[in-house]
Image (cartoon, rainbow, N blue to C red; front, side):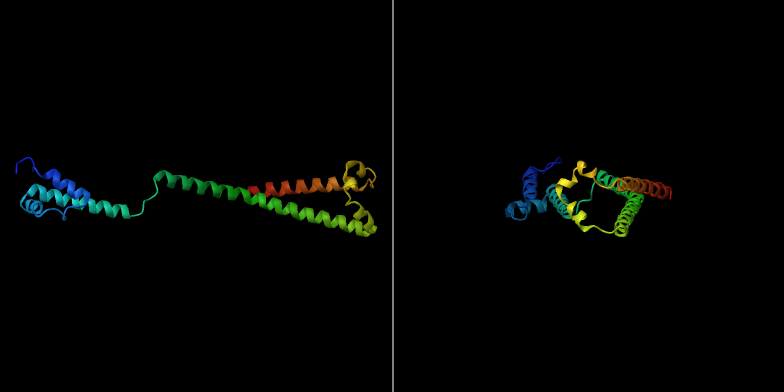
Length: 165
């Protein structure tokens, strides 16, 4: 054995790295038992391999950038949810206004006397064209746009009022 290492050090290191260390010749095992450099090499390499195996078995933690991205995504989704609440309120109000307008229209038709033949006749595709609208009673076509404008303005009022809260 020299003070700078052992002549069989590379051979022992190769066997340990390949996982063949205890399964080698009796001559080499006797050498490692007598040589301090080779014995330390075997001990260090085996402990490093054991630590590497244990580290590989542990689950990988996500990177810091992935954690940051998830936090930003969560923050963005919370902001969108907060913004969406007044919009949902406005949509609910608009649907309620639509139902109210439809009920008022049905009540008006019921009071005038429902002409089921006219309603069924309106289902024909030919009567849906704008030229067919001219022949209908004119007062109804002033009321419907006014009610639609009322529904839109009411929805906007609800949206802006609930946004301040």
